[in-house]
Length: 477
Image (cartoon, rainbow, N blue to C red; front, side, top):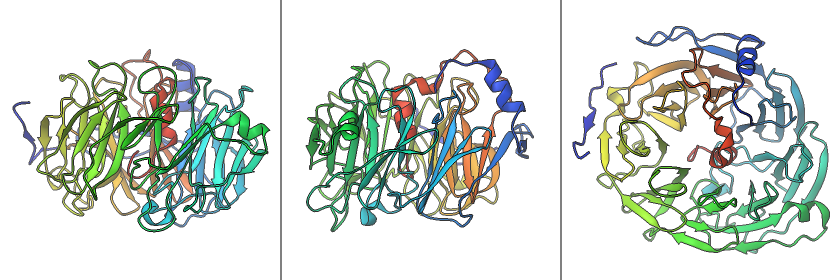
């Protein structure tokens, strides 16, 4: 595809890959088929499969999906949430269990509370150390539910009082604050009146929640500088085996403020990501995108603000972080821009220097909405060092695409009616698949080409990958 408008700044769960698992995945899928794609230079066949879901077909603005091994068979399972319902399926398409229950899910968190648009509101992990996975979620009556992953049978329900000035606990994250594995829980909620921000946090030991009738938190905060539109994320930034809480403030495993980025009054964070942007600096870094006033992009870690930058003070709004140019050190930061139509993305390198900018109208395929793209995931699709990005058509249940963030070139287009898009490794060969929720069906697209790096460790072995796949939403995939 001709890259009109592209300009360059001259300053410039699981286990190691097993070939048998991939073989079974590709040839043993019920509902497998061929997705036609006629773009020049793209294979005409893409492996895909369909899983029929026991949920309403009609589009709903609340709810989402995650993947996790909840029946402990070493393969990915799918957890899908919609208004009043949770359904779970294994990789073969067999339903494991479903629940009719008022799970806490929302769309606009700034007016209706967390977890925000597209967020699934559900977590999975072995939280009691018995070697079996549990599933955790909140309901609108302020109750925490801990259920068996394989059966959905309730292990414990507990009501935890939320802070004064809030309606209920709204967002939950399985964490590791004490260095004992996934044995802790972070709860978050928003102020009940005005512009709602998730400034209230409470950390709990899950053993206490399971065994005691009046569990006490490990720590609490009421001054967390949260994303404006989505819940807190966590990751082990400094490699000490414990998780930090990520936002405009970074919170230590002990509940202390480590870093606070210099947001201007009336400004807020739209999106937040974690990655090893600067391999020359120990640990991982956090990328935050600012809305209003300066519209900056920040890079910081658990020690300090590393840099801040902007492109003509244009709002970055949504982003993708990845190795989009293997010839440069570190990772690149792609920003979508806010424009309601005719998006104009821009890209920074790991040093915060502008690399590229272009107009989406000049690179999108014919018939793609002029509103651009949304729900943008970095994707390891090819197995090569260079990463790509996946996205869906903005503001509609539309097509899905894989594109090159550096140039904007659309490489793959999938004719879809995508209500939700999710990217994760479910085949077991470490490369990632596209997982699309289309009405009451899951469509799973896989790359059929030979994997050029079959011995690459699975992405799920990375703490920040697992955490991000559990806490994604519309603004921070």
